[in-house]
Image (tube, rainbow, N blue to C red; front, side, top):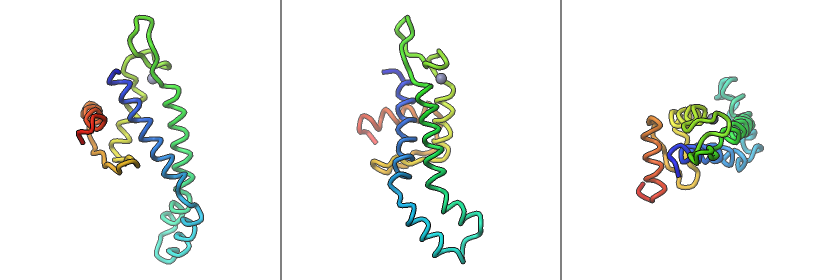
Length: 134
Ligand SMILES: [Zn+2]
């Protein structure tokens, strides 16, 4: 498997983790929390608390769509290439991965905190994680 394909899998897994975390959240609990904390939250924070689940679901679903379009397939010469871009190292996947890394999105399985690293370092750490070295 190629490093680019691995990066795509890692990125899609991170987006899926955000999506599933939002899906598991009880929206009524967030509403109750926002209501209970209404006296101590500024209007922007209260609004975010009430809408964070929906925002996360929408953003994650949109990113899933992007990653579905920018998935890897086989070039006629048998090397992996992005189905949308036609190149081996999709800049869209790399860009999404870099943003997720910058915000240190957590993986829900082991709740591993991924540090903010460049994509090559993340790819290397992802390989270590898959081998059970992290
Ligand atoms: Zn692409």
